[in-house]
Amino acid sequence: MLPLIPILIASTAGYFGHREYKKYKAYTPERKEVFKRMMNSPTDPVTLRAAASTFEKDGLTKQADTLRKRAALREAPGTLKAARQQVFKKAMKSQDPDAIEQVAKAHEAVGAVGAAESLRIQAATLRSVKSAQ
Image 1 (cartoon, rainbow, N blue to C red):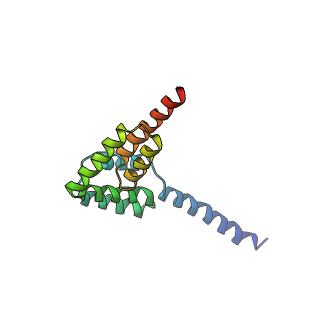
Image 2 (cartoon, rainbow, N blue to C red):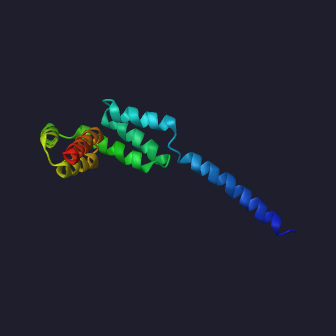
């Protein structure tokens, strides 16, 4: 009977420790709202990087990486922004959904998730139109 007591104590401690760990890494509705606000509002790069550090401390590395990419995107020179905008417009006029997907992946890789989403919608629309014909 005596060896069961340490096992019971250890398992109880493990259970409560795991509960706290899951709570620590949870992507709660509040965190989702903060992330969404940071991505959609014209926030300066310093604020975005500070938010990224907070997300990373909370164990949300994917969101932290996305915020850092967004900060780098905001700091990009005007010529680079103009070039990306031209590529975006050209892709939106394209009739090749696979090419549009590639441009969407490139935009997402640099933190332009809104543009990437628009491109993916355009690619899906083209695919559905082509399949209906």
